[in-house]
Image (cartoon, rainbow over all chains, first blue to last red; front, side, top):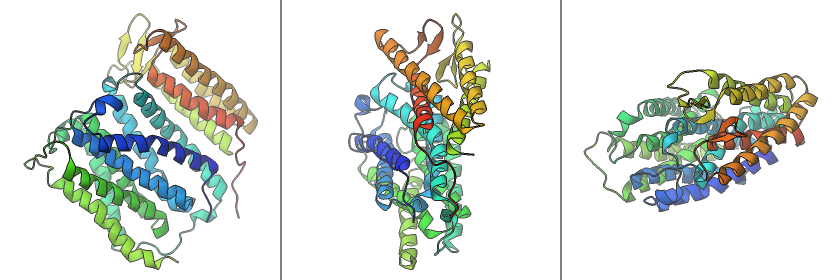
Length: 268
Length: 142
């Protein structure tokens, strides 16, 4: 199976160089965003929610480097584009909240402009290196009813992303803590990535090519559940989303666990 | 189409889109910030005026034209890559000298801000890669 190109490995290492400190700071120092983050977050729970996504991405890219196989990354690859797109959209809408020339602001801009510019070019580069052999679907394929479930959840999370991004002001009021629209929109970028996994399974149900997306889902769910349990501010159990959020994050964990249990032993 | 051509075409189309968007006098999209210098915040974000938009269009149109051949694409990458990275460096130095203002007027003509600087850096580096890097010429079919 073909290894990743030097360019893509270089980009992954650069991504890790950014998301490791971003994720660690947000997750472990959630009440000090005025020190290190491009904008000040009012509630530490929002910082942990964003940090959980970055930490899950750290696990994802570390495994991607270790496996070093384009075939395993290909399906989840375009999630980078949707992720960068959602964050860029949030940045455009809330630019007035960013601290100008703050080092983290410059890194943020560099990071997400780069994502938007480089993702299509690197994809093309990988295809040129890989030829046509990578397009073959390797068995086992994810069968029914799992495939249907993954597609349904993918559509659901993509729909949540669109609704949350467009109506962030309204959705924020249903949250169990005080979340700013910019924090919500940025957090939804990771939801869009999980939605993308379902979309790609509809196109290509090969188990090997969908593992990476499920690994991201699992770790994002684990980090989010820990954040819900240990968040630094009160959790309003009476808010409309107070039950929904834990259910969603448990689903992020349980679905990958079931699929790995079923398909891991079927790998050739 | 070879990778270099694809990359130059894609970057060129992005710049044409930015150039065209910048000309749209829609307040919700590109609010007017400074009437004296005709400065707008394109997409609520990038400080631009007519001259800046024309430069974006020039980068984009030459990119789309250069994408016809690998040789022209390489030349485009080298040329605009050097210009864009130089613009980033000059812009950042000027911003530091002026005390990191929200907006600045490069050479007294072109409005710029930190999103513009970072866009120049990113696209400049991508252009330099396309201009100088050794990349595969065509897809393998085995």
